[in-house]
Length: 342
Image (cartoon, rainbow, N blue to C red; front, side):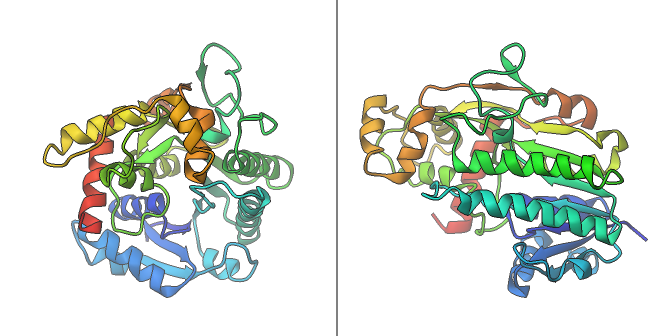
């Protein structure tokens, strides 16, 4: 009998790829969703990408669960060999009250870990973020951020999402160390996740790509991302399960840095039949627009800021060969176009 993996937030952009990767490796998967409708959405998304489409029925099941409530966790985790906790709020526009993001992230992570302990599940892989690593003025040593770094939640530039991921991950490590040392915890810290969506329900993650594809902006601000392909992040989660030495460690998912205009240029080169805006906007224009547009206001502190983030541990210890970021951007754009009929 293959191992049973419980995956929270199974309808998410990253989570669907993790479901697919787990099924391809022969695992039984039980995804948590808020409604049975979302479960069928996940099944429909992964089925076309399986060598044997019937596996989407025989090896994939769902449990209805509200991550903000205690009910249903015992049933969801019954018989599980491991828990992959991916669910966390990811707002494109930062809320006025940061507790709207921080509270659910921290509480949800602790609820998942406590449920795992109660169910006797001693293997957990948690999805955090590079924003729990690199949101501070400089790395602890050298000029490259690594797994040894932690974001500073008191830094004036950190936003609510960055705080939520940092505090949730720290809460996870503190809980395991202080209350559940029997749990072998691995944390995955993805950069900005791009790459192909499996369906049109990709949430916030690819809205930046969609903005480029739709040529919504006449000029593009010069801010950038540490990027990674969603397929590589899914592989990191699955590889962590099969590498016992990954327990007790963080792994950054980082393939390379891309400026927003460079991302647009990569998409333009990969889709020559489309007219993609690639012109860079002067910073003063973006600052002015940020006074009126909440989405633009979010990126003003990031203008011309480039941080070096290392994915070397994932390469070395998990055997990940990261896909090139320019190709990940093109693949993301193609999927956004296909799923939205653009």
